Length: 252
Image 1 (tube, helix red, strand yellow):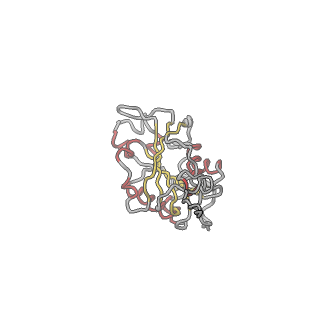
Image 2 (tube, rainbow, N blue to C red):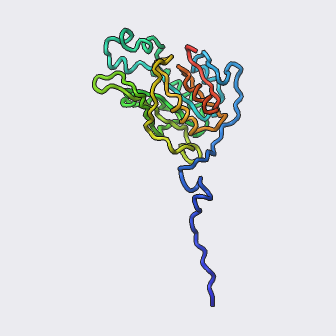
């Protein structure tokens, strides 16, 4: 008497279902909804506006990507070299500084605006990285999921070691997930991109790096926001990567 062959429950091959097979998927399934903008907010424009007001005008759960580079004075106050605004950091010294309470308001506004599983790329220096920034987003749905180091090829302040790098903390709005959201997997966590020698803003950030980051978590045409745009390097990155920029700065 012959027996029927027993069926084996073999796993689905990776080539037939990449989303189930691995977290390293190049397919992005999270989609941003259509966005109905108020007339005051113009895409791909350097807006002169208060960032908190800007965020309040955007619909909730509406954008997949945000960048935030807070203008804080903490490191200058703590290091207290004594020549700030004279021979050191003249342009930085005159910029309007954000209080801790104001930074928290920005974080709350960004959290409200991001879609579920959307990303915030938060720029910090070594001082604030070591001190910790978690209190900045207490009470939000944001969690730290990664860190990218920018080697800018120039040296800055430092009592002991001279500072050559800045840091981009990667936060994600809940639910936290990579599969189906983060679609580029050849980025390293240390990126070398020379800082522009003649920068039009003391806090200008690397255009190509920011372009890579927004490309990893958005699709062409998606909105990318920056409520404290400074040099508007995120605008340049968005245009280069065929994304739509929305952002502002007090200085315009």
